[in-house]
Structures are given as C-alpha cells and as structure tokens.
Image 1 (cartoon, rainbow, N blue to C red):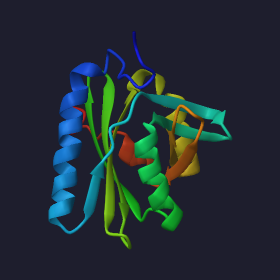
Image 2: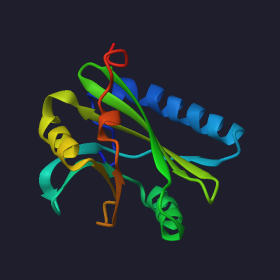
Image 3: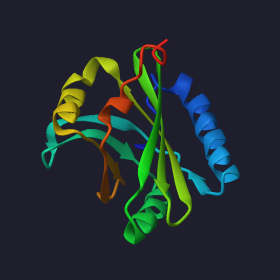
Length: 162
C-alpha cells in the first residue's frame, strides 16, 4: 500500500543520492556557521500557470513536522535567499534548494525535482513574471509560498544537464 508521501517510482533511483547531497550540503552550511536542517519531502508536482491563485511553480508535499519547522522560521522573517543547485538525469531535473534565513543563522535544505517534458508552461510563466513559486504544503491543506526571483536557476545549464 502506498502513502501520499512516497517518492514516485521514476524518481526513486535518484532520490537517495539527492537526499545524501542535501545532507552533505547542509553540513557544509553548518561548517560556515549556519544552523541547518535537511527536509525530506514527499512528491513534487509541477504547477502550471493558474493552477493555484495565478501562480506557477513547484508544489512540494512536506510532512507536518518539516512544514512546522519552515513555518516557524517564516513567521519570524522572510528568507534572504534560495540557493539552487540543478542537475539532470533521465529527463528529470533534480534540485537541491537551500533556503537561507541570515538573521536567524538558519538554512533549510530541500530536495525537489520536475520532469523536463511537462515543465515548459511553468518555466515560461516564471520567466515572464520573474519568479518561480515554491508551494510548500501538507496533506492537511496548509501551504506556504516562497517566490524565487531567479527562475533561470531552476533550469540546468548545458554543463549541469550533462
């Protein structure tokens, strides 16, 4: 029996290495003075233009505890930036997202992904609007939206694409 928080089969071969990269990068942030937390989400889906309140981006399903960690940080301050690392495997764009809260000295590492073959509308909208929205949500319907103002960073360069 599958859970709504399970990783889709197509992503599974890449998921554990991606989580290991997130954990290792969070450790690097910690070596540089941050208090780091690696979040381990469930499925990630592409939100096309208008799919949610006129927005487009990625919808990331989080366990309640991970969502509460993020919510607690966002209540105190807006993120100062999101560092994005991208690579490609089997037409999947694998993302390492690191949400920085400088005043609090915190960083949250978050893996995400999308299928290149169904992301054109999302990416076109993001480029036109100068942002790509991350919809971080729970099964219970709670949702935080963080906007990344450099949407081109979510598209791997030729070098990153292999």
